[in-house]
Image (cartoon, rainbow, N blue to C red):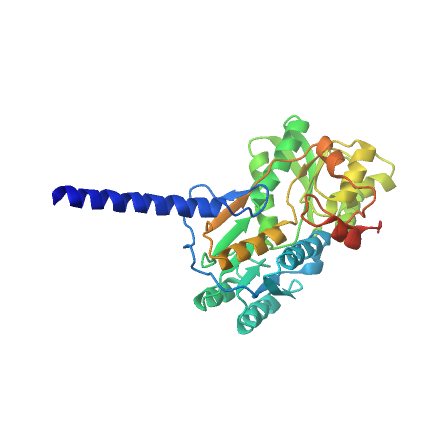
Length: 361
């Protein structure tokens, strides 16, 4: 009998190990997006089958502001395209908070009332979606968060683009380029948005212990027009600057245009994977680096929702912290046949790229 008990115990242990391995493989089988990996140090995972539902899924998305800039527009397109690609998703409901916190609160309530099978949230602020996330999860609806932070961890899956890494990649580039000393302008994104706060933290980490000083700073709101106004103001106040740290989006292209209109050389400047910026970078040969923050995160959120509804196990938290791109990478991605408003990398089909960005704007 003792040997029988031992055999049973060994078999049970083997089954337990097999189950653990099976869960791990389950999560690894789900490809959310290139560069997205489980967050180190956080082993929490959803249970296999926890959110499994029969096909004909309705997926909802609460977007903090579709028209905030061209990147947010494309992120919405990426999400919609990922939903349309899977025929088991019979309805994709995208609600636009239009940069209004109260509207985002109401939008999440609306999606819960519609009894969607999963909700994707891109928070406007670190608290704008917290109550709704808790309520949705309590109702048995899985919630995937990306492109913005929350103060709650009640969400089911979190995919974060590593804002601090993004800002530091660009800050480190300027510090190295300037030899550790000099003056820089700083163009920040949307005030109070978690991504802007974290990107700025990354810049501060890069500047710590150096003699690189910020001599002008303002919010360009990640938009071309606002970014251009900020850069023009900086230039007219004092055009002498050693480098420019731009929090990405359309602001880098706008700032490069300011120097072009005044007929002066663009100083070392940081940017993000925008087609228009890549075209300018290639044409001018400016000293620059592109941090990577793909709008494909919209599709990654949908893929995570689908995986959960299939009954697969996912990590609770994922991180997205790719290295920056040099001029060779810009040349690889740049498309002269597409408008300035497309962002790289993308999961959009060639058909969708031509549909949305087929002519210069």
